[in-house]
Length: 376
Length: 53
Image (cartoon, rainbow over all chains, first blue to last red; front, side):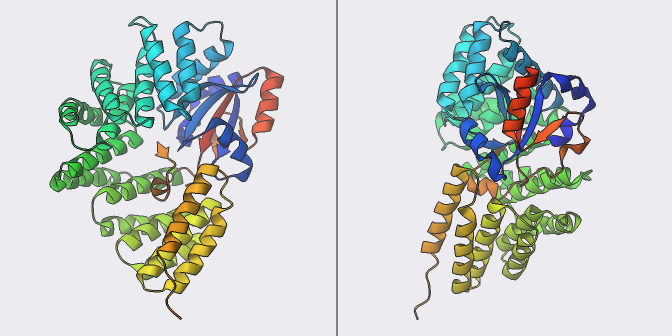
């Protein structure tokens, strides 16, 4: 995504915004994360400095066309005089999408009610509505809205985003007649999205993984293996041009195996990446995870130690130590596992965002409870 | 998109390159500075929240 922001086509926007990038890992950014409620990475905002309100917000990767549209929306929202009531409802939806997705869904629905069919932001708003329904766990309405709206959309990135949202909602629900009926409409659209040249890798990843999750929910492991294998083969055919891309490929590999598959299948690629990105603690973390999943506990512990030597932030330290503790416990080294968990707890206290901090502390405390000290 | 729940956090990652090659003059990790620049130049602020993992 950051490679995309360097695209020459965006240079014409240079003087139209103040450009800010904020690392989720940086302690100093905690106030912003809390105020604006970023719940995913990447997330993009356009903020009006007057009262620091959000003009536009978009979670997740975007294509170049989407970034351009997002920036145009940001500039027109800033000027405000050009906004119609529907534009204002769309802006209101964006402003609360991160924190109050159910409210955002209502704002997007209002925007759609207020506009003619040819409103230029209609399809964008439909996609955002699906996102808001997904984020507020309204699975049935989300999947059904996605299937209906996407079918009528032109086949571009917004179509794909709408389909992806609906597929996640189907993958998140228990088997039900409505889900089966919606799947019959949505899966062909998902497969069509895979054929489009505009479908970005993150969306391909989401489509394959949701197909895998849905297959597993239907107890069809052969189908899950088929979709997973197809995606891994695509990933292996890509030669990474940067560390960014190498990381993205590895993330997709790990996420794929986490749904269904044999971790041994991706270990060679992860080992190569750890060597290629000598200062990247996450490369070690991913390798440690998969070594542990493959029951190679000594290798997992060694990978954690290499990651810890690569100067991770608080998040990274907490995660690496949790994996290390888990591997130690699997080897029967309970005392060492508890020591690692105590260190993880210390690291977790320093995580910049409250959500990340609370989640990690809770997870580590639960691990400590189930990692009993042996009787003396 | 990467949701910030632990199970995902442990899996994912991305992006480690900096924006040095960008045509866009990014301010790094300094919202107050961006806010002041926006007030001075009367411009909206584009913000990218990213993660090194």
